[in-house]
Image (cartoon, rainbow, N blue to C red; front, side, top):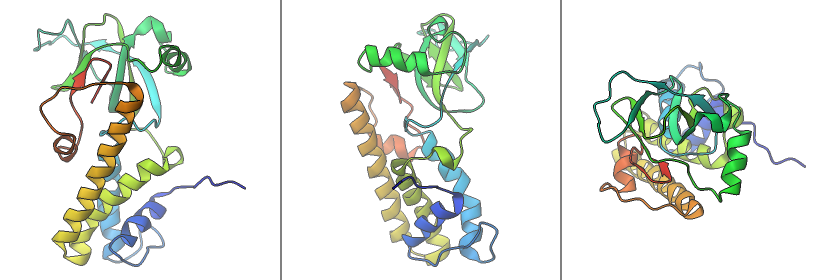
Length: 226
């Protein structure tokens, strides 16, 4: 017996609609307000959730190109981020991964190091800042399909998508706010569990919920980045 779920945009939209509750749609281009709102909000919500946390989805490694402009002098290097960057996981020396996108060697090194991240870095102003010369970025890519989704990720997408659908379909702001809050709590739990497993500590001034509501977790500290 296999318990693998074959996720699709229609399946995830129908899970979100069930939170309202609202009748399911048969296809994304179906007539009616439910399908119309799903078409409008599904992709932006997935992109938003991808930027919030390292969900362990579609991890890539790419060599970083040095930017000619470095406005933050506390960092030695400013790099241009990859065009498909969703969430920055770690900055590593390029020779560690051999200059390719295969993460197997990197993940093996991470296992040997007990999950320790390699370098302090910051994502800000449309750049990746680091003190590592000739760096590569380990990150979650936006080039992902539903085949790579996990249940934890889909649960968060489901809640945030339902929050977007609630007002146009039900006209209930209280329901939209409650569903958004549920999504925030799920992300906060996922981040807290990840930090606990990694043994990481963070010292930024914003709460997880504040950073989630901004659409991304942008603070970077030793051992990783959010």
